[in-house]
Image (cartoon, rainbow, N blue to C red):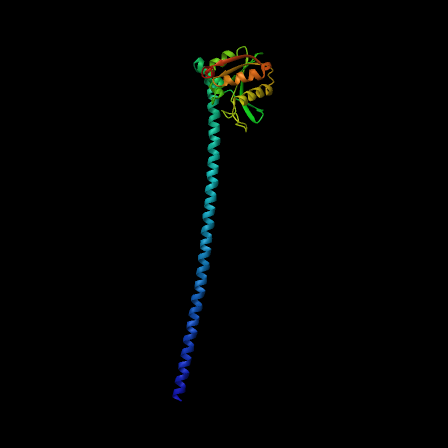
Length: 233
């Protein structure tokens, strides 16, 4: 009888221990799942907050850049206005340069490019100035332009790929520069003009005159040397 009671007590103790262990494991498992879920939610929240902060920073940066660009453009406009207003106080040569520099350029489509040009004077006769290799129309002497435009209409422009003119898709060559100049004459409705070629563009002037003599009144060469005549004869 005592042995039976002992066995019952032992079995009861084992069951209780087992049940307690199961409850403990279940509790640990529940806590682990809760902790994992909580950690995942915390990570997701941190990622969302980080992404939100990044988005705000990017938007602010873009806004600042736009504001700076607008401020720069406004300052540039004010500077140009100030230069124009104050040009009268400059020496005569600088007055001419300021007036020509601040004169807005215009653009016209010629073939595969947009040619930027400026027009000075209102004379019946037209003089077209072709800049040297790599030069731009702003490099012409203001004093020269002022004197030429007193009784003539003077056209200065940027060759393809230089200054404000676009580069286009065609190869650079004397023949192409000549065609561009002819196209400019057509676009501006200039039937005939005096052509002034500076440096290498003297070749362009000659090409234009030889191929389209009916469009050229006079040829003028500046800073030009017949090097080919020396090396090829």
